[in-house]
Each structure stands twice: as C-alpha cells, then as structure tokens.
Image 1 (cartoon, rainbow, N blue to C red):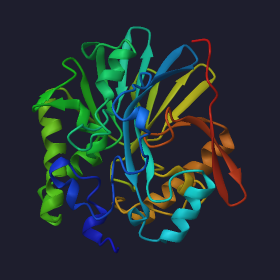
Image 2 (image 1 turned 60 degrees about the vertical axis):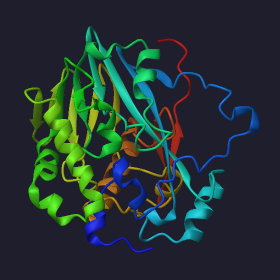
Image 3 (image 1 turned 60 degrees about the horizontal axis):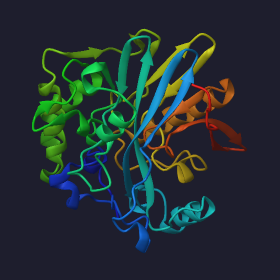
Length: 327
C-alpha cells in the first residue's frame, strides 16, 4: 500500500495506535511457536557483553517486531520476500529486534535507548528484566542517551508516567526534542499517530529537570561522542564509544531490516521523516564503517547487534561479531 508524506513522519505508533499502522508491525506473526515452546519454555536472559578497551558494553534484548514489505514504499513484495529467502528469514514479516545498550566505564553506568513497552506488543517490553539479569540496577544508571524519540526507543523509560531510572540524566539531540515538542508536528499527523508525539512529550516531562538537549556532534559522556545521523528523524543520533585503540559505533536506526537494507541500502522505511536524507546518511555511514573497519551495533540489527560492515560490490553485508569469552 502507499504511505503518504504525513505517514512518513509517523514513526512507530504507541499501543493505542498500533492497529492503525499503515504497515504490518505484526509482533508474533514472524515465528510460529512449537508445541513444546507454547508458554512452557523460557529462553536464556537476553543480554550479552562486549568490551571496547576497558569499557564494557552490554546488549539488552527488549524483544522484536514483525516488519513486512509494506514498510518500504519503493520495495515490492517479491523483492522483500526474495531478500528474506536469501537470509533464511520468514518471507511474510521480518522479526526485527529491538535492542538497547548499557555502557559501563569505571563506576559510571550509561544506558543507550530504553526499548519499547509491552503494551505496544506482547513480544516487547523485556528491557528491565534483562537489565536485572545483567546485574544492572536502574538506580545506578547516571545517563540515558536517546538515539531518537520514537516509542520503540523510549517506551521502557517510563511506567505510569513516572521515570523508571530515578537518577538518570536524559540526553537527546536538540533537533529531535524540538521536532517532537513542536505543536506543528502533532497537528500534521493523522489522529491515530498523535499518541506517539504525546509519548515523546510525556517522556521528556517524566525526566523534567534532568533533560539535556545536546547539539550536533560532540562528547556527551566520558569516552562517548554523539554523531548526528539525520533523516530517520531530524535529530537521529548515533553514539561512538572509544577507549584506547578500540571503538564501537551504536548507530541507532540506520538499518531496520538488515537482510534487505544491507543488500539494498537505498531502500528506505516509511517511517523516515526525510527519506532522501536517511538514504544519504545510511550510504555515507556504511561506506565509512566499512572503510575504517569500525565495529557497530544497531537497535534493529540481529541481537546482540554487534558486528562489522563488509562491502559486497555495490552492496554491503553485516558480519556478526563472534562471542567474546573473556570480559
């Protein structure tokens, strides 16, 4: 189906608008449970650690969303299905992970993004249980770095209108905060999508007095630099973690469906505010990290999301990082 310009800035909707989305974010349809797994088996806790120099980065699984071909205005169902077949993924809908990351350096604990809410879909909202399994107390988190204010990145930061992380400073790019708090943004959206704007405003309100709006690129915490990556949203940002000779770029939503967008990087998702800019940002960043051999991590890359980008002709491939035994 066709996604119009107003819908392009809609992003993922909240629980109240989920059924009205113009694409199928059909959590739970991408994988069929086996009889033995139908509510009787538990998976291991969803966290995994990686070191960047002396800094420990822990990936946290919040769950997944099923994203189908209708999410990509320029991609046919046949092209989408073929990309899924090539990657041995379900053809109907890709189970896109929703990841977040904890960065621990000395006694400082920083969270990058906050996952979604279980109210949005039953396959989401697992951030806190995995944070607990990883041994991280929410009260110990001193800062939350937000890649952007879409609900699958901030939904786990509040509960009942209150901040889940009582001591944390909430840090967001000034362009994103300005966009989502501008009354014109809400007015331009169809009614079913307006709750997502309300959620962004409510999240900022929950952390009132502890919100920092950072401009452009620059250091946001010791050893962590913000990288402005506009297009998906005006203030979409990544975070470069550097320690000694090692580095990791947490790139947010540069890629939503890896089997499609790594091989076809010009394919944009209907939730990009500025599709042409989003494509240009993705192309430039893929070229950069492939050339510089920088490890990356992404909020929708296959969990735990750590890996490298390799060139494959005019396309790219995501090469997952091996398990790290010694932390």
